[in-house]
Length: 344
Image 1 (cartoon, rainbow, N blue to C red):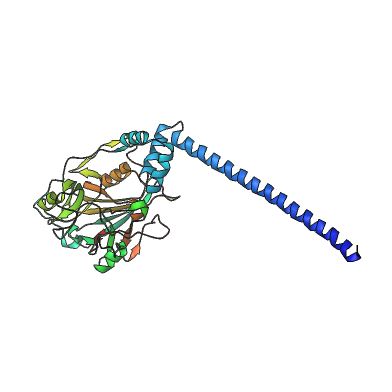
Image 2: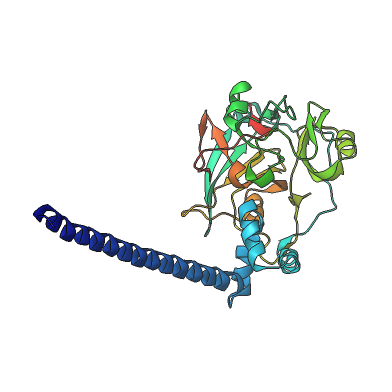
């Protein structure tokens, strides 16, 4: 054996030992990582289990109700509860349906000339939420922005800012609901009935749901009805969502937690015609969100006689002077929607 061959032999052994050592370290590292990951997953599972099925039924109901109002949260809740259990929790924590419809009036509101341009924006807050309340003194300034291409396969909805800009308006909030499969809806297909300028532009005469809109005298009308009934009631602009929160001066009944804590959008009207536009931030560290009861309390504090919940969650947005003035939940900004209440 030559000297060169003698030198190569120890080198091969060293390389083999190094590779073997690397494999051992890699296996140990992988084992540690897997162990840590498994421990974290197990800890997270039991933490969620404690939250969902812990010693406080009220807290459990609040958390479950909150998650059931979101598509992703709904899926998580179904991992820990049966359909029957979730149905029971929902039934114990909700807003009672109102069979009453707003009493319409043939009398228009008499708004003093020096008050017609009056718009107030008020910061509202509670123990779990922050938000904005816009008070529009003249209800005739409220109009419905509608995606004229709704339902077209090639068209999505528009941002609230787009509706405001297109109409040369000063402000706006999101309005009715829309088809939103897996939270990926583009706002092109509205939910239920939509009325614009006294014409049914979405839904049919037989489509039934909670309708929220204004008649020709600028009275806010809320209640469950068909598309044809909405036209018979003389609604000129209307959308579908809900639930109704206040009707004819009476707040609806709240059961349990009355729904979870989430971003909310609410519209209401006072006895003197002023329109209340409320947007609550949610799912954020500084604002978890509001319950329906929270929204009712705010509406009553500002003297609403009729009020209803609009689409919320990541759709909740308030625009004023070309800017979004609330904190939207989505990092990508507000969502495209088929309808928006705008302030001319």
